[in-house]
Amino acid sequence: MPSSDDLYERITARLGQYPLVTRRKIFGVPAVCVHGNSFLAYHQGEMAFKLRGEDHARALAVPDARLWDPSGAGRPMREWVHLPASQSDHWDDFADLAYEYVATLPPK
Image (cartoon, rainbow, N blue to C red; front, side, top):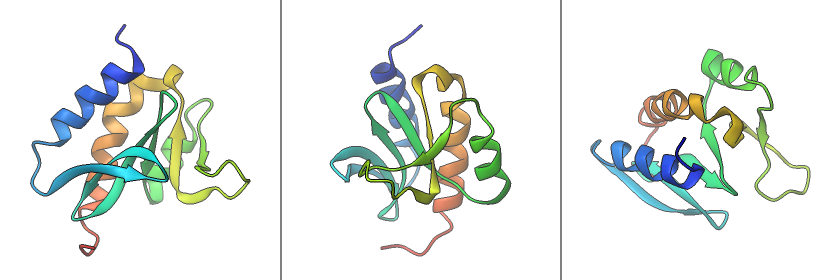
């Protein structure tokens, strides 16, 4: 099984083929953006996805999923779901869903 780092690189390379997708850092961690809006972040070998509606609920239903709290100060971001490396089988699907959602938002 590939490492979390390898999976992140594979997923971001695939997403990088979409128009207007870039990489940058948010909250000091690597992230992927479309139109300047972040939709995926990689933190300590785990992945966080910006989702809404049913996709958000499905992601939170994955075992060990939680709202992403990048500060670690008990202030989770309501649209972001953090999936641990143990659930990396789900990363590709949620990366695509996060891209589809954020691509509909106005550019920054």
